[in-house]
Image (cartoon, rainbow, N blue to C red; front, side, top):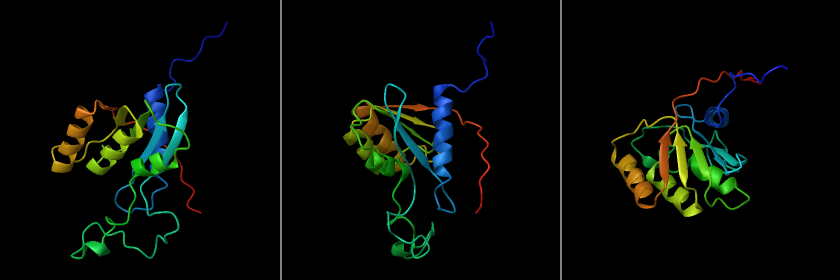
Length: 162
């Protein structure tokens, strides 16, 4: 009798691989973030990536990270991956888990808490120690939302540039 192979992806790596794939949908030239929300049955409930709101032309608004004029930067316009995933959900998110490629900002942390998600898995904490990051962690700790780092997953994807 042939045995099952042993070199398959763990659930965490599988979900983080999908997060990386979702991030590739982002048109942001400097930061691509993906997110997926999963229930206890390991079913994907929703996905999202960072980008402009539905219906806005990606070439009309600026993707600038730094600008003297805040209105000429991407920040007042971009919807974060976590927010998009939460907004894309068509069912309750109570006790769900969210997988994200970048540790959530304080605004996304509030949305995660309010939506009922109880666990955040992330692969990068690039802004660790900043005020926004500290506030996010404080919000999660005080609301008993667990946050767990998942080491970076190496997933190769060929992107069709058409």
